[in-house]
Length: 299
Image 1 (cartoon, rainbow, N blue to C red):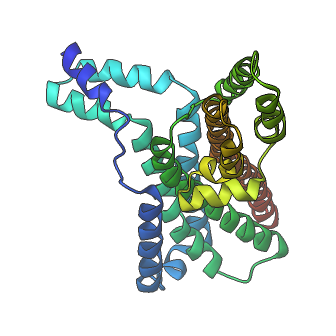
Image 2 (cartoon, rainbow, N blue to C red):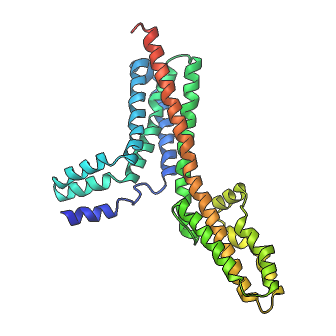
C-alpha cells in the first residue's frame, strides 16, 4: 500500500487541466450562459440568500491559500487514505495535488460570479457596493492574469538553457559568471582585455529593460544571441585571441539568459501581490457591506 501511494505521490504535480487559463475562460463562458437562463433566480432567492451563497463560495475559493501554506490538511488526508482500499486511496492522494487545488480554486472563484451577479441584480447599488463590484472584477482579472502567466512561463523555462528556479540561485550564478570572465582575461593580450572591457563587461554588469524582457517572454524569444550579437561580431578583429574572446561572449550570453530567467521568476510572483491586495480589499468591503446591511435591517 505504501509503495502504491508513493507512486501516486510521484504524479501529484501532473496538472489536472492542460491550460488553467483556458479552463477559467470556459468557466466564465458557462457563467454567462447560466446567468441568461436563470434570470428569475435572484427574485426567487432574494438578496440575503444570494449574498450568503456568494460569501460561502468566496470562502471556499480562499481556502486554496490556506492549503498552500499549511500541511496540516494534507498530513491528515494521507493518514485517512492509508485506511481506505487501494484504488480509493490512490484517488485521494491524487486529489490532494496542489494543481488539483488550484484548478478547484479557479473553478469555484469563477462560478462564484454567478451568485454574485444574482446579488447585484437584486437592486440599485450603493457607492460601497459599486466599489465592491469593481474590486471583485479586479480580483478575477488578476487571477486570470496569473493563470495565463503560469501557463506561459513553464514552457519558456524548459525551452531555454541556464535556468534556475530560485532568485538567490540566479544571483549566485551572476557572481560566478563575472568571476569566471574576469579570470578568463588574465594573461592575454591588451587587445583582448580592451575588447572585454568595452564589449563584454558592460553586458555582465548592466541590466536589460524590463519591457524588452517581457516582450521576449511573450514571444518566446531568446534574448542572449540578439543582445550579444554586436560583441560577437567584433571577434573578427581579434586574430590570435578570437577563441578566448568567443568564450567570454558565451559567458555574457549565459548571463543574459540568467537575467531573463530572474525577470520571469519575479514576473511569476509579482501578479500574486496584486491578487492578494485585491482579495484583502474584497474581504474588507464585504465586511462593511454585511455590517451595513445588518445595521439598517435592525439586527
